[in-house]
Image: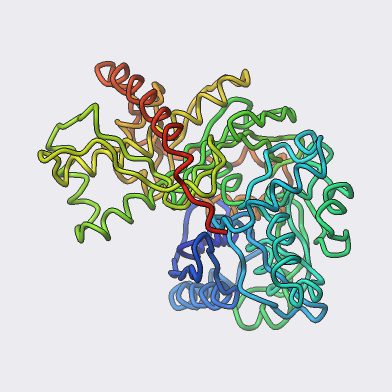
Length: 488
């Protein structure tokens, strides 16, 4: 048996996989996000741990015998978050999350301090990444900063609670802006430029490596063997890519989660900072990936459902049945600012082009289209770098809506593949990395392909229409971006 733990932003998901790669059990526990000030986004790591233990206890009620057969645990999770520990391992403050935009000026400072940063970290340095967060902390919370003995990424805090060991993996560490992504090691240059030390970093491993074994206390509390090893794991996007077999050059993953990512596997490190494209390590040796990150994806529809006091299914059905494609109506989906392609933490969401005739179905259609158009603008950046797209697998909570898939396929002008269990994502990838930790990377060929439920081909009647709308979408942001106010 192999456990996969995925620490997301909105929930912790745990999956139990047997040696035949069948899902034996799974459970999910919700998490809360705190936004104490504009641009801020934080969570309490203690809540992560409590939710993880609750999920395990829930699984144990019916599967205690299976838990006693666990050989390895794999970890996946939200990236870029800063978990700050003192020399005793005590948490110093709430974790600052990936979608926190407070450190925009610090990101600019770091790029100025290291002019060749892109060749080291493979990405434009953005407010959401980890290094600028620590620079912000040094300036605004010096009493906390002086006590920081270790900086962990979210999933790696769970590892610390499981094993007592400070460790991370290459894919997740890539998003800190402290890793030399080409050489797959911490960069002394980037650490020094942000006033950090190598001693404050965990040891880094390939995702399929063993980092430690669980403690006796955890083995007893969780009902698992004391010999259970913990794999290095992966950031959520790389883990999800493993779950659907995106490991070959040119294969793609499109994730419609709280945020949205467009992930393309690569067999070499080839930075492409144009359009805010990230080039990071994959979670397997000698592999990298390019990735676009859109800070608002399925969460745009969650927000719209809350605002309109209507459930998601009803909203999408209304939009589909209305058959309304208003060429004038646009939605900029920048509810949390944006990374790819505009790199603007101060950007805000906008409805544009409404009339007296505009009703809820048309606004829902605009939200669905706005997210899709944002993905399409990001795809242009990847194609401009010379990467060739072979296939696109769609995952995440937003993948429940095949109507949204039709909009995406036409906007991207690409066929989209929808697999069974596509919402499991990171938890399945984490469990697979746990399997590899025990059985070796060569056993990657053991993984079965997930069943394909549907392939959505682009609707030729929609493709030209969305191509024209994408140009208006891009022009709208450029026309109003000076109006977005810096709230730092």
